[in-house]
Length: 101
Image (tube, rainbow, N blue to C red):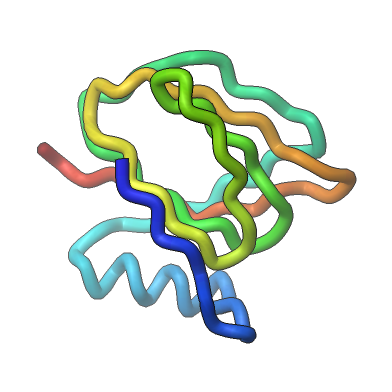
């Protein structure tokens, strides 16, 4: 897994995030999670790329928990067990993509 924390004072917009992922040859799509919505442990046969647009999300990857905030990027290798839950009182908006292995 690779976590890239957003360090700049201005967070990229959803459109800018789409452009970043498209420039990497990926096909981004949006996901919105209502507050406290949880996705149970699962795996994918592809690598998952996710960038937070707004809100916060707690991830659990192989027993390691961490919070992602706006601008943060996560890449989860294929076949890695993970779960996540939207944290806080506002929806968590993410831009995601799948990377073939």
